[in-house]
Amino acid sequence: MEDHTTGQVFDYTRKSGVEHAEIILPLDAAKRDINWARDRQQLWNAAEFAEKRKDARVAREYEVALPQELTWAQRLELTRTFSQEIANRYGCAVDFALHEPHRQGDERNFHAHILTTTRQIEATGLGAKTSIEWSETDRAKRGLGSGKEEIAEIRERWAVLANGKLQTLGHEARIDHRSLEAQGIELEPTVHLGPAVSGMERRGIATEVGERIKAEVQARLELAAEIGRLQREIEQVNRSIIELSTDIRAALATRNTGLSQWAAMRAEAGPKQTIEQRREAAREHWLEYREQQAGKGMDEGQEEATEAIPSRQKGHDIPDDDFSL
Image (tube, rainbow, N blue to C red; front, side, top):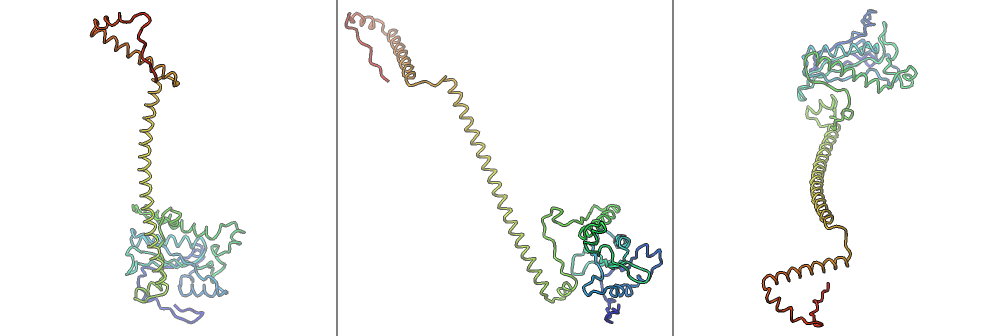
């Protein structure tokens, strides 16, 4: 491809890993028999010429992960369907390419790069900016949501199409367009090196970006290990608290049983007595005990007890023993 603005030629003929490339136009353009945009070199040179500002966005890219459960034909059909919806939604041209997994990467990493123009397709070239490129002020004036909400809708649409395809073909796998945080999954997202850095790293060339990302990954791993250690300590403390709570409950149950028994004994003993009442009760018990002992003596030696009685003369009775408490 030749860049007509600079005269520079880019040769992609030896690029490997591209399974299929295709340009999709809006259905309205097909009805109007607009075909110039199907030429890749003509399309992207028109995109360059249409922009006057040096910081203008010439194209917008969507990168999607293709379910590895699908065949090549099924992945192509899914990508083509999504690309057609994007083209119809914004009236733009869509240039997509299916990529197979990198040789030194994950063998399940089937993906597609979807490049769209930022302007609508017209019969003689590119026209006005597509709605997704409008400023937030212009979007609000036309009753549209924010650009961030627009991107979220596109992500959700991709998930719906992919999951519908998987379900139709009888696969249990599903994808989720939401972030890990929104899904409630406490995992750190992976870091994307980009094609340039990845290529240099595969060739054994150390890069500043690669080293920085490796340092970040190492820091994340260390942080994850520390979080894991803290979680284990918290679980151990929680178990100790549960065991201690069990012991406390058992002790309280024993105490309550003892208190109940004591209360029952107090109830049987009657109301609380004063010291004088206790003394009188003790005296009565003592006298009762003496009478019992005296009765025993009469049964065992009645003669000796009878002989002792006359010795008590009038005025010389033997006094009772003193009793004190």
